[in-house]
Length: 124
Image (cartoon, rainbow, N blue to C red; front, side, top):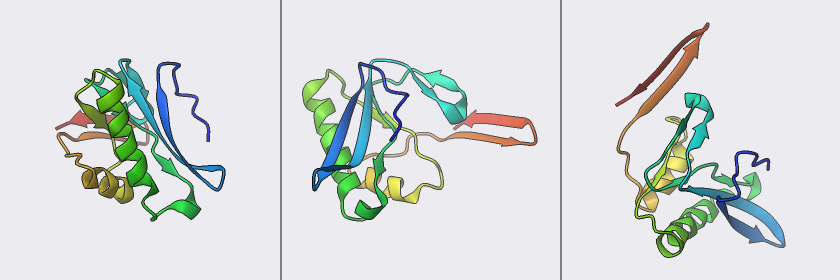
């Protein structure tokens, strides 16, 4: 798993099974984060969760939910942040289920699309 976006200030919550990493939830706190699809850095107010990943053979077993719950616990207990944000693709139903299951709510929608060189970025 390439995590070249990581800063030395970021943290990763890791799920391990049978001695192998089966999932990760990176957590960024107190720094702007470059969001590739939006082609810009965003300075999130609070912690930012991104790059949630569970290996295919461990999906649908609660690993992602446990990772996000543990990451929330880390933010609450180990940082001064009181707010956590994330961006999720509109078609990413598994991540939406996990995040709403642990209490995330959609606050706003950011959109991006590119067709034949025409680009649009928006927010609502």
